Image 1: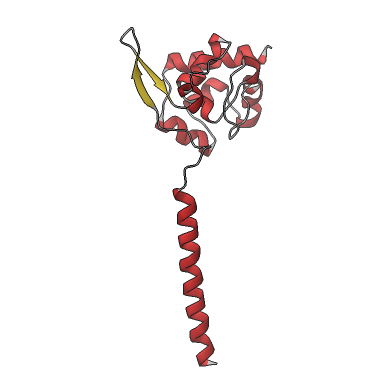
Image 2: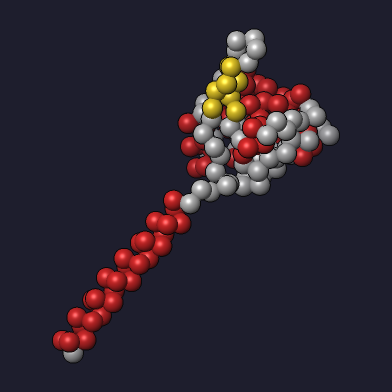
Length: 149
């Protein structure tokens, strides 16, 4: 019995090490669902513009001026807004009806949710990339427009 215990401990340690290596290798691969780091580029007018998604880097634009704030803030790396013709990621939900549904899901208006998100994912996103009052107003207006289509 004593001899078998040694083999069991050895097998456990080897299995643990192999699993650790496997998960480490998985975590270091580039995740296409993760938003890229926001870069700031200068425009002709001297202002700066945030770009945070592959869609923006490829020069894709929306057909709706209201939808442009989602591209500028990098929301499109996870979200689409199909009613505004904003192409984006599929990690997060389509935000076309968010103006109508956020209150029911989170118990607060879209504006309040964007100030203080109640979901873990969005809390981290907003904390790392806070919205100005104007950006928040533009997003709320765009989501309202999308909900009316």
